[in-house]
Amino acid sequence: MQNPWLDLKQEIAKQLDIGIEEIEEPEKYGDFAYPCFSLSKKLKKDPKEIAKELAKKLKIKHIEKIEAIGPYVNFYIVWKKFGQDLLKSVNEKYGGFIVKDKKALIEHTSINPNASPHVGRARNAIIGDSLVRLIKFLGYETEVHYLVNDVGKQISVLVYGVMNKDTKDLKFEDLLKIYIETSKKVSENPEDEKKVFEILSKFEKGDKKTMNLFKKIVSLCINGQEEILSKLGIKYDFFDYESDYIINKKTNEALEKLEKTDRIFTDENGRKVLDLKGFDIPMESPAFVLLRSDGTSLYNLKDIAYTIDKINKAKDLNIVVLGEDHKLYFKQLSAALRILKYEPPKVIHYAFVLLPSGKMSTRKGELVLLTDFINEACEKALKEIEKRYPELSKEEKETRAKKVAVGAIRYSIVKISPEKNVMFVWDEALRFDGNTGPYLQYTYARSNSILKKAKLKDFDVKYLKDEREKKILKSLAKYPQILEKSLNELKPHYIANYLYELADVFNSFYQSLPVLNSEENLKNARLKLVDSVKNVLETGLELLGIPTLEKM
Image 1 (cartoon, rainbow, N blue to C red):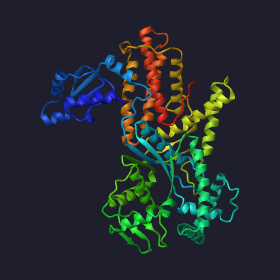
Image 2 (cartoon, rainbow, N blue to C red; image 1 turned 45 degrees about the horizontal axis):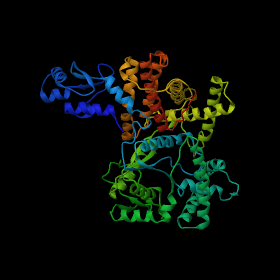
Image 3 (tube, rainbow, N blue to C red; image 1 turned 180 degrees about the vertical axis):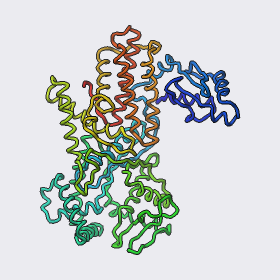
Image 4 (cartoon, rainbow, N blue to C red; image 1 turned 30 degrees about the vertical axis):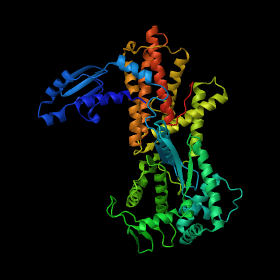
């Protein structure tokens, strides 16, 4: 699809014989600007003189005026021509489908299957799902994977906790309490911890009874987690099980390949460790252990085998979403993969979701469950809908409340740059004004309401002369660039921030300039402007997994 804003920047850069990154987008004095400082050093000439010379000789399509202001060359777009082409190109596919015949794979969420997830875990899923939607929109054939750690210590602790219970009527909701109680018991008693590892060893040696119990508990957890996350619109194509990599011997294959590199040694505790010297890893880092002294494999080895599998399935684009507490681990994993001549996946690390009460921990039981959090969001949104629209039916109020709640949760989390903590405050998240999901939903509903009252006809952008209209045109032009930036940096918060800015300039326009009551030619041009905003809001909200409402 077209990217008119980027095309124009590239044309300016081409004529100046510079990199596109040197072209600036100023708040005033034009739509683009080039600072002549680097050229000044090269030519040993006053940058102001260079700017004057360039302004006189440059001729660029869609640029109506080029002027020198100090050491800057400033470029002004011919909006009546550029804007006409732009609005003709804005539809439901605008900004997307820029690649063909490429495959992407993204692994995200991958929560330990030992309990109901807490709110903090939702950030992984929401960032991951937003990236999935973006990658698909940009044209990649995309697979979504979830790694199930079904043979780690955590799940073994849970299995130990249920071994003497009747598992026939065991429910997903019961598992959290059992896990917290058993974790406390194991941490306080070495004998109990020893039994946890004995259970794990039985599984790896193929004990059928143990394997069946693991399978039952893990299935209960995964089904429960999947159901909760689906309420936020999050879906997966494949659930990959760590245990499969033991059963199909791929962990053994990975170990054999690593042993051929002469980088594996046995430490003083009898464990098999991978030597990562020569890589960008701090010397004091924990050892990258592959096998315990009893011969059972650790997550590290299974993850090497698993990641190789993922790389082989999608070489064009391979992504994994991990918490910031996995930064060192991912460096170690990447080093192991490079030892085996594989390029590691792209990674996006994210910080914590904080509530006024602080950080959450599943093991200690200090958490707010995601399912309770979603229910509370729906209740609070319903109260807001009832207050604003008492005339609606109960069913319609509840439908809108669910959409508003999902929008509030997802937007509050995704609008923050991944490396920063999210502080979630209910009153702010559910506001219908300001930088919130409900505000964007409200803006979309407002644009939809205008368009329902009139038909789109032929239009001419030359009638859009107000600065507020030009601000919308400029914002619309930047949308494809924002999508590409979000993918290149794996940061969907750029889309969220862009949509808020677009909604802001649109509402400023709507509140001060008439649309339906304008003169016919102006009305047609403004209706097309509203339609373009609606299209971009619709696709943008879909990329963030935020439901739209036809009426608010």
